[in-house]
Image (tube, rainbow, N blue to C red; front, side):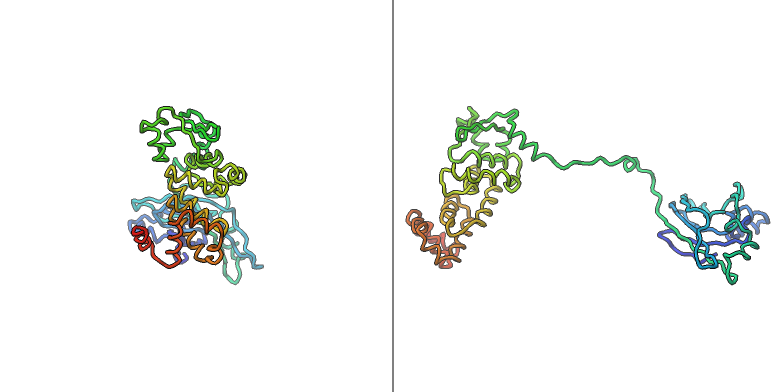
Length: 370
């Protein structure tokens, strides 16, 4: 018997028996001899010439191959690769067992061929497998736990598709099925759904339920936004997707939108900021502020700053003031800036205070005293 070694959670030994028709060992059953049953050892355990011995209560699957070294140094596989299941018990009654090509139990019919490559012990000693009275054997073992059958795992898992809520809601808006609200935008009628509008905007909720004309007629006239931008706004309400996900729509219509806008200086994102502010759609407002902050340049900063001031878009306003501070020599001499401070003196005060390094709290105090 070889020394015990561990593979995973299982202990193994290798056993060699010169006489394949007799049991591998007798130590585990020495009690039989004490009881006077002299023949018990021959029938108490597995028989064979070369075996993989296991003594465990665990259940596992074993795949093994056995190779024997030939005189030329090559290892030749003895018999085929085998897969076996060892069924353990938890009551301590399971004794050691062995696995191998000619391993068998005395009550079972023995294999057709006993001995390594079918050789008796005497034949083996004279064969090409023994060199200097040494038999060299290589074992390859693979062990994995044997799990109980799982009814859930035995059934192929259903493939779960990606969510389609946004696409479904967009289709609902575009097709207008079961709509109960109409928007009139630049002589175009857009069908919508009051429940969606009320859920997404407190302004729409009050407009459609507070006894106003729109709550009765279910017709809302939009006069301060072009139809293309308003459709992009509604798509956000229905899908919660920021316009980045609708880039093809915005890109293909931006020039047309700017032409149709009430103020030709306003970009489509500025119009979108205005409408999202009007209906208090906070997430879209912040997105528009972030996008406009990236667009600020000398030619746009004045118009963007005016809008940020009017809509109380604090993030955008601060971005404009920071740009002016960093480009003061360029911006402060622009005709657009001169017109701005004439028309909006409060903005001029904000710019002056910001350039002077006055904090926001000090700025508010200055505005109150002014």
